[in-house]
Image (cartoon, one colour):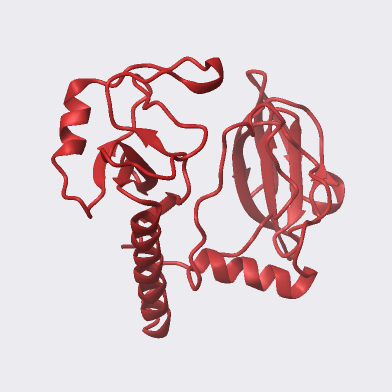
Length: 251
């Protein structure tokens, strides 16, 4: 159950047939007969289960039809098993789809509460950066957050952060570049987190999720902390650079 994630609950309706004229002049790709046969063999109330593939797409409808006497309109939602494929399930009506999503959310919520009450969670989470790192405008296209589940370690970590800073958006991001590596180390009595990106190295005290500052040098690919020498050895543009582990000098 902890590895099952509900990715979407309100995807656009799709048509269960080989070809359909796309509205508004949009182009579509036909769906293979094998996939359609698999969908058709499911029961009337159980959604079909199909792994998503980039090779084929199911034609989507701009607006769902009010009536569907032939049962050709399906209502998809997506789930993911962590470490495995994304799967798209199809329900015959929006209400059936909502019922399935509600049951999945309810089961995951009850499971998370049971693990917490028994102190059986495999790990605890703490937010290191809530708004400092973000996608750029192009990379963010098409990315949608999954459905949140109450009572999970992630949910509690976010609530702990909101209890300190309040709900809502945090400060603007300090970096929109790709994150390549990260490391944590202790120096002079402080726990420090360093993150290497294409825009440079950012550091912060481990207890301050909004204290990130840029140090120097873009295009970092690797970190290594030498505790005996109190040095952070960095790899940048195929060269090694030593940085003092002193929080004061890094900032």
